[in-house]
Length: 419
Length: 160
Image 1 (spheres, rainbow over the protein chains, first blue to last red):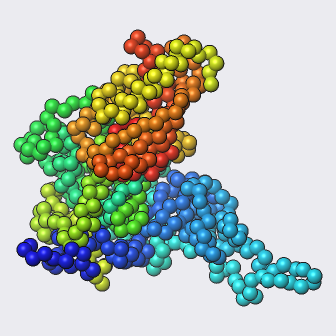
Image 2: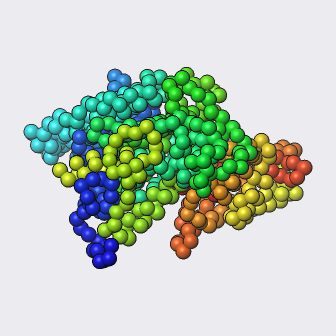
């Protein structure tokens, strides 16, 4: 461009009708970010909150977030899963400070308002006032009804041991939300077997939350940025693969089957391929196929807007995106296995977890590239990224040499945000 | 604190801790695996997982070979923003001292300094160690870094 544009525009301007050139401003604007929270995290969408295995017994709870709002996932006395907002109905305090635990009821420490595990208000101290010298002083107004002052409760969907919640009571069913194709990949991983929690990793990534969705909708980078993937054949351009989306293109699955490691003309040209690289300890990659895979060795599923479901060979996890402003998000990894895993399989999943997470051989650098993308976006928000590998269309493909899933997400983004 | 520890062993142990800190701060990553026995354990684990009995670690290595693979990763395969790191390690507590084996703990804090940027607290926790006497001197048979700083500032590349 010859003429110098306004470096800090206030209105987002797309270069064309399509979603292939994404304005930097969509990652840097507080105003757009708040609209995203409103339209993607708080209305008409399901957000990930956790696994049922995290709250196995009545009274067990876990504190987490939907968007930026603090919520508690709790199992009630009847065994049901509830999700309530962690904001006291009285003075608005975030009353629950523990990250997990077990309770018979929730009590706000400020004025001891107490709630059932379903979020119903059950006790208000001095509700009927204090009797003194034959007179009643204070108390709540006569028309005060506890039934009108419970905690905000979210709509809950559980499937295959995974819990999603929505502030929007009118949200479509979780199954309709995913659509049949993505639901199929969801059910492949969460096929009804009880999950066994292996633990957490947490990282704070100084980049816009969408960049993590894009990272897992981008099959172009793994065989280039991540030496391990390309050298050991785990993920690379010549692997048999498919890309699939739901009808609205917000969710996606990247499906790949491990090919041969080693040399092939198409991939050895990439500088990250290291032909002579050998592990001192090959047990990092002690991969044993499992029946439930039904073929593919890796399926990475992005559920818009809040979670990524990981199957990379024997390592499985959920990765929860928790936005904390336009330029930062917390990324929480929950690794799990299945109840019928042998001890050997559990150890294998744990060993392969070295590849993933904030220090992982093929993941630590994803956080780094996101940080330095965001860094540039902030300096010149008038500019745009380019996602035109494989064309400018949005379509399912039988290969991974395309950025079609990113375009799909931004087509959906434009539909919702420009409405 | 073990009462049967002689001064010579105490000196050797404190030297081991100081040498380790100096090595992992030096930028010469090849020094790091040499502090360990061949079938060592090295784990970097959030305190939450440790205390709740969850086995997942951020890094979990079970041989010196894996440590060498990590060094190769740091040098050759992991893209990352370069940084300096600086360990401050407390005096070890020796929980038990046997003839050829010491079980010790020590607090640590690691500062990270990115180029042209301020130094920040990066990772804070404690080491849970098993140290063996070998013909080559004291070596870690096991070093678990149990960290309080559970929210990792983006990524951890270099050894803690």
